[in-house]
Image 1 (tube, rainbow, N blue to C red):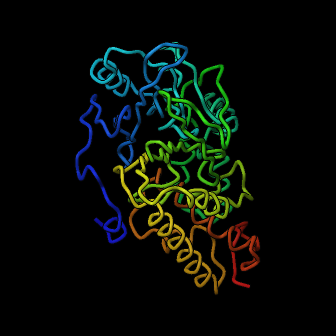
Image 2 (cartoon, rainbow, N blue to C red):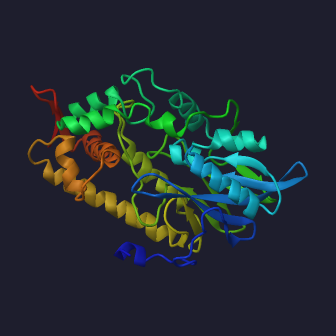
Image 3 (tube, helix red, strand yellow):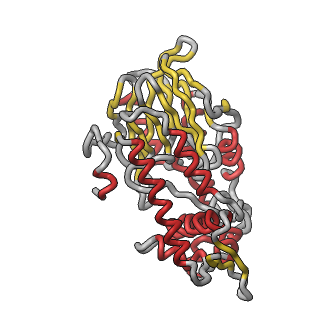
Amino acid sequence: MNPNEQKLTYPWGEEQPAPGEALALADGVRWIRMPLPFALDHINLWLLRDEIDGRQGWTIVDCGISRDEVKVLWERVFENALDGLPVLRVVVTHMHPDHVGLAYWLCERWNAPLWMTMTDYAIARLWSRPAIDNSAAGGPGGQAAVEHFIRHGLADPQAQEKIRQRANYYPGMVPAVPARFRRIMDGNRISIGGRDWRVITGYGHAPEHASLYCDTLKILISGDMVLPRISTNISVFDYEPDANPLPMYLNSLRKYDALPEDTLVLPSHGRPFKGLHERVAQQLAHHAERLDEVLDACATPLSTADVVPLMFKRKLDSHQLTFAMGEALAHLHALFFEGKLRRETGADGVIRFTRM
């Protein structure tokens, strides 16, 4: 456990739900986990006891990726953790594959509606369409992504080819999205099992990420906006090459300032914890340090690829490299749009940033 984690409280310690099982956290709130084929090898999903139009059942929050083995685990959850009741609704926090991937299957399996923000629903629908060729892609892959990263200094042909082959990265895990949905927006109060859950939108990690907070239970389902061990990825990719997402993310974190000190945070990765304000402060400090580090390094002109090893000391696989490049560029852009860096395109076509 790193020093930052030691400042948080984990009410369940190392305990976690077994595959296909659920762990009760509060009245009507259950925790399940599903596997992911990445270095980040799991996602936490949530079951909320519900009643809609007189029908007793459950609301699912987030879905896992579309894999047969995940469907098998879901079937075990249905058998073991729902008390014989149906799924009444599926809520998705945002459009990343591990959150929305199986929404189509869950909604069809239970004839249940999908609830989601408009922006993330629309992008999930768009990206779930298979790429016709490597020039178009859903998510950070394909030829457009390669050209974007080449402009930012990625010169390794093997790394370029691996990214090129990821043109169907997104539809490979999100093969479909329900054709209809119920829109949720910031400030909405969703009645789930007789309790209000307030929607708190956030930006920078996803287009319109939705966290859910229940004042009665003092529980925040934080999605990817607040994680206990790792930093939320904030990236600039080819589809919005001049994006400036880092300030959007940092500003979004301030929306949690008014929540109680003893809020129980249910994150998408890692363990449920208490210490929300401490963790937000850690994230603000972390990014401030990274920005200072990048600004100092740019005393001489640097490309995004030059900055990656300064920010990420470990060896990166192709999946991690795309997000590391995106995150490094997000920090460079934050400094550039603040007027602390200038950027120039060299004769080699590579964009480099230099301190003002």
